[in-house]
Image 1 (cartoon, helix red, strand yellow):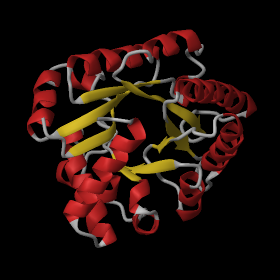
Image 2 (cartoon, helix red, strand yellow):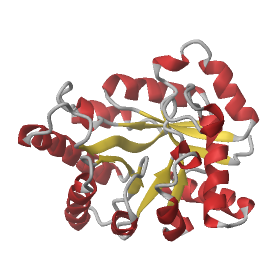
Image 3 (tube, one colour):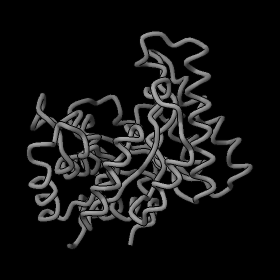
Image 4 (cartoon, helix red, strand yellow):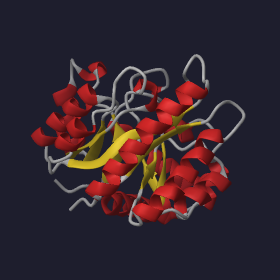
Length: 266
């Protein structure tokens, strides 16, 4: 398969695809779309690895999402064992979510931070990139700010630590802080219908941007309200090129190379 696009973040191991998963994966192959299937807990991480091992154009990331940090004790040995698969290209998604929990108190933050730091260590020791999930509380950028501090500290121990800030909803300042730490920022199909991120997309160097779908969530304008899938990464790339006012082929090929470089894909 000639890879033309890589969906840097999807969840096609989720139950939303139980009826047509193989058909979708075949359509991805036909359209030259590879994908990184991202785990959110141990079970979904195992499913991501199993899928990736079955299909040449799929890869996996294993990790514990901050919103599951209180439901699952992070078993570093179990995730480390999963990460031994040659198809595992990252650790995550992991980070801090101060938006979704019903109550964000100091204990919630402590647990999330502790679980995130364990995954930083795992990524640093294995030499794999992190897939970050920063979700700030309403009207703030608190999760981005706290994650940036933790990453800055971690770089003292793991100077080659790198990764991607998934579903980026920060501003120019947050993007600049992350790219200064060798992290990329990725945009979803939200950019096809919301204009909130146009300034950031224009400002961030193209070499620091990835395209993703976060499928099954946030379908593009053409399919609003429906289940999303990795095929939408084409529309994300097209919109990024349009917003930046740059040649589509240049943007497509650069996004592809950025993703290959981050995840060390052949």
